Amino acid sequence: MTDRADLAGSFLPRPGSPAVEWAISDRPVPYEVALAEMERRVTGIADGTLGERVWLLEHPPLYTAGTSARDEDLISPDRFPVHRTGRGGQYTYHGPGQRVVYAMLDLKRRRQDVRAFVAALEDWLIAALWQHHVRGERREDRVGVWVRRPELGREREDKIAAIGIRMRKWVSFHGMALNVDPALDHFTGIVPCGVTQHGVTSLVDLGLPVTLDDVDIVLKRCFEERFGPTRSVEAP
Image (cartoon, rainbow, N blue to C red):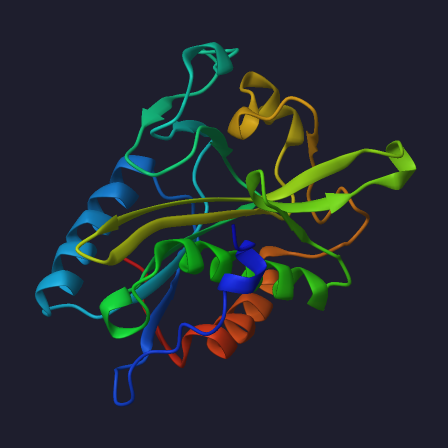
């Protein structure tokens, strides 16, 4: 089977396509509000009435369960609200200090290959992390981006970013969550993404005094290299 690293490649749009809308929310967005807005946007992209959008935001503390979530992986069901969602993957945590990136892109304008698209999202995150001198890596047996932690043990590696997408009529939604400076103990209420052998980390946990604003600048630059130009718009 072909590695995801070999699949990624470019997802630049067809010539003449409009720039992707780039929106950043400056305060936490309730999950239900974000989901409703994504549904509206994806419908509009699919029928040609709305443009592609990348939406960067934070959520208040909550857990989400993807389509592969197992009940036993929800360790503390009363700790934070739990939202069942149609994205791929298992349980994950969202909260302040984590940059959530919802990517609503039309693969009909780009490349109709879901597995390669996930690999391209991983590449985007890996490139952004490298701008902060962090070596992010993919693993063929688990989705997301990982960093090795030799100071914590020879085989130790921690997850720094999660990926979970959904497709409708070749339009993507949901997306990625990069740990900048979330409360890492909040992850202990779940088995993150069903992985028990490894931990969770963040840029600040790795000793980097970066902010969400710092990360946003790098994310935008690395996105444009792989997915094409953007234009800034007001967040919903």
